[in-house]
Amino acid sequence: MGFGVGIGSLISPLYISELAPSKYRGRLVVLNCLGITGGQLIAYAIGAGLNHVNNGWRILVGLSMIPPAIQFVSFLFLPDTPRYLIMKNKTEAAEKVLMRTNPHASLENVKLKILDLQEEDLLSDCKNPFKKWWNVVLELHRVPSNFRALFLSCALQAIQQYTGFNSLMYFSSTIFKAIGFNNSTAVSLIVAGTNFVFTIFAFFIIDKVGRRLILLISIFLMTCFLVLNAIAFHFIEITFKHNSAVVLGNIHTWGIVIIVSMICFVASYAIGLGNVPWQQSELFPQKVRGIGTSYATASNWGGSLIISATFLTMLENITPTGTFSLFAGFCVLSFILIFFCYPELSNLELEEVQELLTGGFHVKKSMQLAKARKNGAPPTIEKDTPESLNSV
Ligand SMILES: O[C@H]1[C@H](O)[C@@H](O)[C@H](O)[C@@H](O)[C@H]1O
Image 1 (tube, helix red, strand yellow):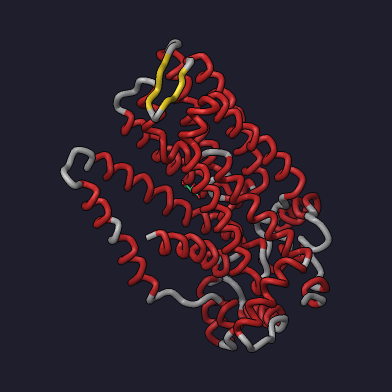
Image 2 (spheres, rainbow, N blue to C red):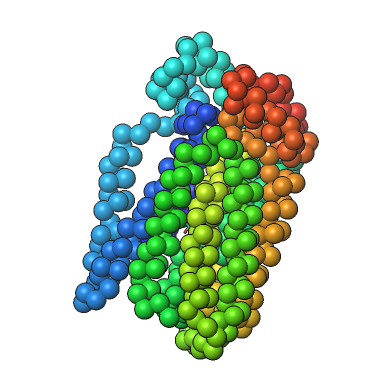
C-alpha cells in the first residue's frame, strides 16, 4: 500500500501539470489535493462508523481497494502527456492531445507549442538508459536553475510537514480526548472536514490570488493559531506521560480556545500550504522533472514520518506548549524563506518557469510577469537556455 501511495502521490500531480493549460494548472493540481483530503475525510468517517464493529479494520482495508480499482480502469483511457509523446517522437499524437486539452487554441499555436517541446527535448540525446539517468541526476544538481527548483520544491514539501499539520491528522483524537472532549472521533472528523472544505476554497482562488500570496497568507495565519494553541495549552497546565494526560488547569474555557484555534489552523493550512507544494512539477524542466519531483515527494513523506514518529514524544518531553511553539517557529522561518525565495508561478508556461529560475529566484520579476500574463499578455521571457545547454 505504501509503495502504491508513494508512486501515486508523485505521478498524479506530475501528470496533471504536464497536461493542464497554464491558466488552469494551479486549480487542476488542487483537484488532486481534493482527492487526498476528501479521501481522508471518507476514511475517517468510515473508521468512526466501524469503531465498535468487530474486526472493523478488515472492512476498512477491504474498502480501500475500491478507489484504486476505479483508477486502474480509468487510467486505460488516459492519454500520455504531450511532453512525453514528443520525447518518444510521436508528434502527431502529441498534437492530438494538445488539441484535446486546449480546445480553444488555434492549430498554429499548437504547432508552435510542439516546436517548443521538441527544442527542449533535443537537449537530451543519450541512448544508454543508466547513463541517461545519471546525466539527469547530475544535471539536476549542477545546473543552477534546476538546483534552485530542487531546493524550492523540497523546501516547500518539508515545510508542509514540519509545521505540524499531520500531527493533528494523526493524533487529533488523542489531543481532544486529553482535554476532555469525549466524542473525540467527532472532533477529528471536523478536522478532516475543515481540511477538505478549505481545499475546495483553494481550488477556486489559487489561480486568481497566486501561489506565493496564498502561501504567505496561509503560513502567517497558521503561525497565529499555533501561538494561540501554545498559550491555551500553557493555561490548561497539561502534561503527557505514557500517552495519557494529566490536567491541572481550567479545561473548559481553554479547551474551547484549543478546538477553535486548531480548526482555524487547519483551515489556514488547507487554503495554501496544504496544496501549493504539490505544484512541484511546474518548477522543473521536462528533462529533470521526474527525478526532481521524486526528491520533493520523498521530502514530504520523510517529514510526515518524522512528525508522526516524534509528536507524542515531543508532547511528553517538551510539553504541548513547547511542541506547538516549535511548529510556530518553523512557520516563521518558512515565511521568511518563501518571502525571499519563492517566485510567483501562476499562469506561466512550464518552459518560462525554468527561464525565470536562471540566475536567481527573481521573485519581483516573477510577480510582474504573472500579473502581466493574468491580464492576457503573451509569454515575454526570451527563449534561450544557456544554463541547460552548458550542462553535463
Ligand atoms: O497535501 C496533503 C494534504 O494536506 C493532506 O491532508 C495531508 O495529510 C498530506 O500530508 C498533504 O501532503
